[in-house]
Length: 177
Image 1 (cartoon, rainbow, N blue to C red):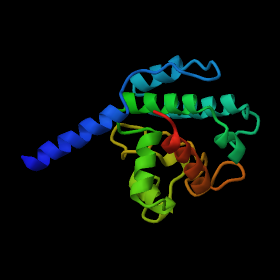
Image 2: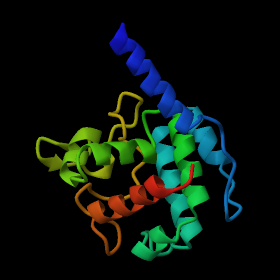
Image 3: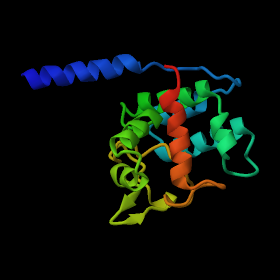
Image 4: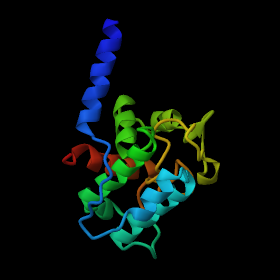
């Protein structure tokens, strides 16, 4: 009973830090209704693709198809937190940038171990984007994919996947809640 009480306290504490409410906040006037609709209907693959489109649109990088270090560092924090909160809310806390950031911390910032934990790597082979799991049975932190597009060991643009990932979740970790 004491362990259960302690676990409930920890869960309540985590929920209190990150309330599950639908945000509509955007520093750049982005409309998140389409992402919300995809997530609430469980269309995880389309929601992931739409999330990537949003990131590129906000950074004005649609033509390039990737984000630079400066794009990630300058990305509007409100929008990043809105995307994260929507993913968390509609996956019942299984997916989202904060979930990924917590796993990242738990593995000591080791990208290969993160890939193992979130299912981006199986038996020492990093997955291709087309091989990902698109259901609620995917491992916690499996989605969204914001650090790579082709294969989990390749980045997108000039940064490696590990560098992209560290920058993105680093922004979420230091962001105001």
